[in-house]
Image: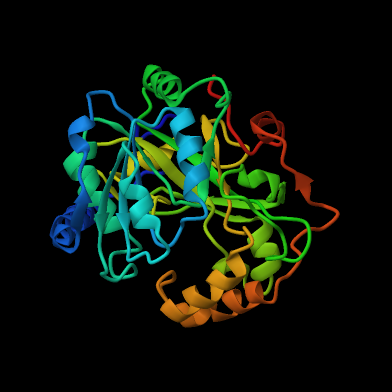
Length: 345
């Protein structure tokens, strides 16, 4: 299976192809229109050179995560960060303005109405990301891949290009502490995996959906703890965070799926044959308990927020997510042994 061909996806008819083409054009048009919602606070995109690797992020009140976020992705070789701030009030904007490799836009428009920030980022990717390898991640996601501790992203993208691949998929792996949520100490200047050092090695369910051909991966810790009675509502864990972008491309549902549909062939899930990485999900830092109260009130993170009110309430109850079956996070080699990360070949 390759990330640039369509022969590895289930075939679809001409009617479905036509509808997907219209959908992609509609998404691009919506993204183009959304540009009016963005106010540039610091545009340093004149620093971007051919071949630069770019990171795109939408965030709000993530000051706790940003020091390590930048340290991690700068170490991987990200050349420039393009960030949309959605009305932060925790000092984050002032911090971002001090970063020499960051361009920042701000909006107070609805995160949910922007398709959870996708429209804002799609516009920036159309404007600045064309022909670049682009990394689209949330502030609580840290990408790792085979040999990431010694091989920069430029090595990874060169390897993908030699194989004719235009995208790179990853499993979003929920990390959690041992003990009740919210009771740990965390220094923002340190690696969050020192606090969140446990995960569920499985089970994970994988199916490919039609007509997009995208994966739907579910399971893991959040499903076990928060969605045991309604597993089909549990979070989607597959993403395509790294793409050699074209202004004709568009993410459909966050970075879980994309158009044109051939991009979705880039990832075949845990245990698959395609090269893949892991997005270490650091949602469950100690602040998650207080944040759940505010996010429940805002109602911006789910299509039907009322259906997920019990999820936020359950986090506020400070459960201990650890079980004797939990595995201690050790690094990328462990991910490969467990079949959660694919090899580069």
